[in-house]
Image (cartoon, rainbow, N blue to C red; front, side):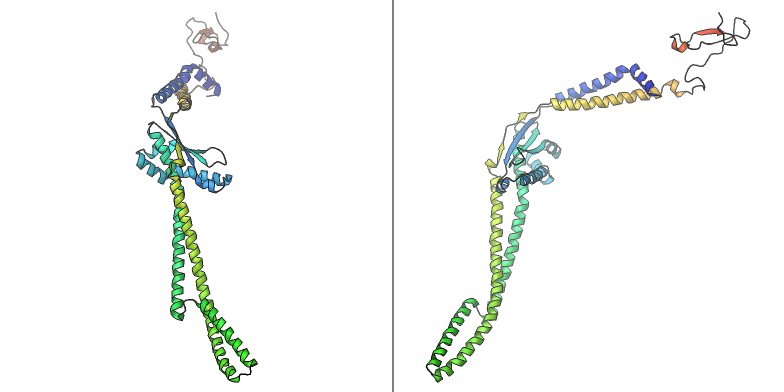
Length: 360
């Protein structure tokens, strides 16, 4: 079949092309309008973490992108479903998050539901759970860093205890300063004895000074080892202090996220069903139109005149009907008059002779 044949077929069944989409549009719109009213509640979230970052646009963009993903993530949806009794199919499609502006630390969490009293609670709970889910990894990292720092501090403390046990020195740095001062005094006394030509005192101070110098050399090596261990201990203590501050900061953030001022919820408002009805009716109308056209094509293909073979040479036109000439005119036959299909007189026959000339 050619395109013009399909156009003719569509014209013949124009009512089907119009009626089926209209019926589908009316039925779909009716079903959507009969559904219960939908209510929208919005929770306004003020994110303290973004305030601490100085309202950086890149920080807001990254945080907001993460927040949207976390809002409909499985852990948050599971907790939300457990606390509200709604299924994930009722929560995920109806939860969304938007920001007021590109550099704002305010996030609007919206939930659309059928229960006016429940919608605000779901929006607020989803906002709080998302904030906690975002902070939870920070708390885990801070706590892990604290445990690591505490382990380093414990190892450094054990090393100091082992050093004291081996050397018997509690404060080698103090001992070293005292021995240096003592050696300095002995050196001064030796110089004074030499000036006074006190040979006996010079002979007595010489070995003593040598002994003190040897002891100071040994203590100097011990002091270097002690300083390395003690520096490691001080660094570990600083790490513990920093990690503890991080943990306290994250816990404070969690506490602030849970405060009533962090999330403000608006009462549920009715959502206009017009966009949904228009969209649903439009889709159903298009589908029905396509189905109607398919039905027309199938009917045309299955028409009896299409199923049979057309005699060659007549281009789908009705072949001439050879009839017996009952008039007795020699060589005359009855056949369909050429062009009779286009003059509106289908099936009309004319008598012609053997040469094809019409006879009265």
